[in-house]
Image (cartoon, rainbow, N blue to C red; front, top):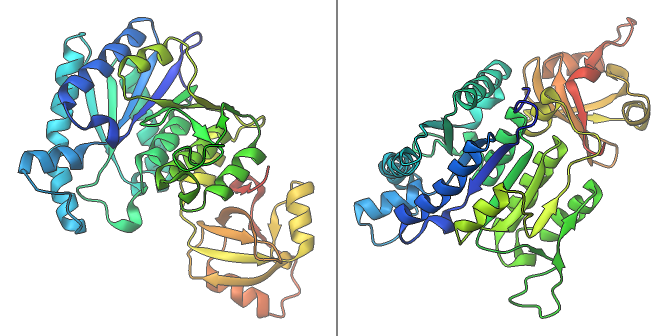
Length: 363
């Protein structure tokens, strides 16, 4: 997508669940004020919000958050309408309409539906409407979930061609370790290079390095968004006025700078949206050709096939050491690849993954 018109900034703002506890209505009114001011200046804003499950639990007067998936989905269904009503009322004060957009991964996995979703969001922005996006928790099954709204916000930022992604949470910035446990924890104000971000992700593990799994998902979101050319700010959003400052040009506590060679829209979709259905193991020659010569993957470079997949579905590509090299759309189904590997055909080696439908892990 083309993103915002020249001279305007297209923002994606993500509000975490922890920010919407307590007096949710008053908190949303505070955020709405900053968003409305940015839109009056000519900027465009997409809002990705959590909070439906929590509000549903409040409405249903549940003593605690349910554990069962069905109960969580029912709570989300109850809370989503209330959540949207709060946003609609808060933005109406400023004369701005809102549009509810509920997404699951299946809405983005299909390329045509991905483009339709992107186009719908762009049209809402052109009309001066605030899209309010949430994962469709009431219906999505585990295999169709994004897993968290951090990931969803990064994918949305890539899909609409955003300039800036604001990840608002209840911490002020990223640290070298959990500052609550380590007095020597050092603040990290900038992450400039993809290698540094990859190193931080590896160190985070399940989140134990920072005391919460939430930081792990934010690092993953930063990788997705910066890889698509989006600047990401991790900032403390507990004071709604903080959002106003960020939208006016303040920087977040930690800024993740865009990749020097951003992925295009299609390659971003390949790299981050598609869920691989199988794997192709490659020999060293094929790896070298993909990494250094910009080649397509030929059958001669495939040593093994794992999983079952149809033609034109996503597959992981692994090097001889089993490390992920990249992923792409396989032109053959899994049985065709297996049959070709054990066959005696003397024909020229066919293309298995075309270079235009391929994205490498380390670019």
